[in-house]
Amino acid sequence: MSVGELLRTLKELQLDKNTLVIFTSDNGPTIQDVHRESGGSAGLLYEGKKTTYEGGMRVPAIAWWPGTVPANQTCEALATTMDLFPTIINLAKAPLPADRKLDGVDIYPVLTGKKGKGVDLVFYYNQIDLYAIRKGPGKCILRPNLLPAKKPHCPRPAAAVSP
Image (cartoon, rainbow, N blue to C red):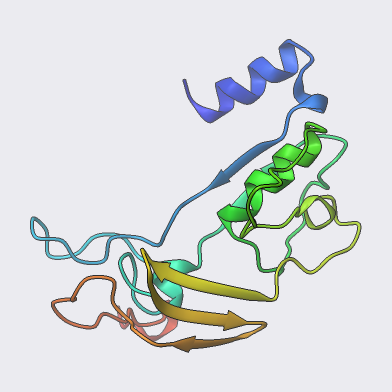
């Protein structure tokens, strides 16, 4: 089933105004792999999958919920997929687990454009090892690669590519 079919079905069943749909990725594109010379592109962001650089960690997300999430808007707030769990639990009016501290926060105000700036502090771990810390617009990279890269990769901006 394609995304268009899914959204059309939600509308036909009149579930669209009661359904939050989120499109996102867990990490950036595969820049290099053993079977190809190169993989995807992170655009102007440096590096890709398996690194803590922006091209490996910063990914787009699209939220769709007619009547609740404003259409045709962009948001620069920092959020992580860890924020989806507390957001969805709160939307379902279910209690959050009390026996542990959650890494994510409820980003409903960010999604709806009401208020909120997302999270301000994010720790990037690979299992128990701390690889990077983001605070606001700044990022401290302690260990750049989750796995050793063959060579650094930084695509040139489209305007710098000669025909």
